[in-house]
Amino acid sequence: VVGDRCAAAQLMQLDLNYWLPDDVLVKADRATMRSSLEMRTPYLNRHLAEFASGLPTSIHLRGGGKHLLRQLVQRCVPAEAGRPKQAFRVPAAEWLRGPLSATLEDQLARGSLYEEQWFDRGAVRTAFDEHRRGAADKTSVLWPLLALGLWLDRVRGRDGA
Image: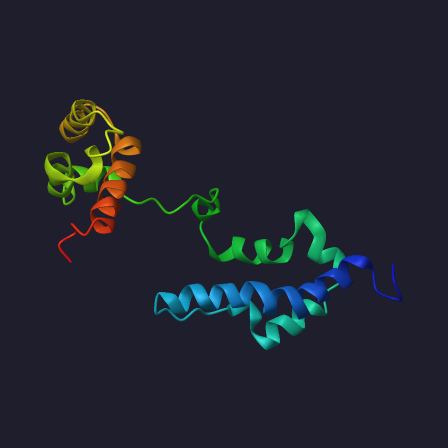
């Protein structure tokens, strides 16, 4: 304890005064502005922040944090919403079978991928055919190869731009 406030309360105040405005919010603002989005921060509402800062530290730290918020949300949100976080999935497997199939086909036929002889064209063709038929999911091989091929074409001035 430093002064009349516990260390946890002092650390929360430091986060609020320095880490949040000088790091987290700056990064979030840049990321959203880059995508022409406007971010909302409902937990930074002045009245809510004042209420939360007046709560005892024990409430902030109970149950690993966010205890009060979790209790309130439980009343309003279905239990299914409590599942673990997961990353946003890009439907690359479907794209490679559908809208990007012709692009990958073009890479296999004439792209820059094979000039360096880094890849066996026959093996890549087999992987693509298996993927397209649905016999195997070869996304983890085909997706990076497509990206590399498109990048090589662009670097070498063959991207049609």
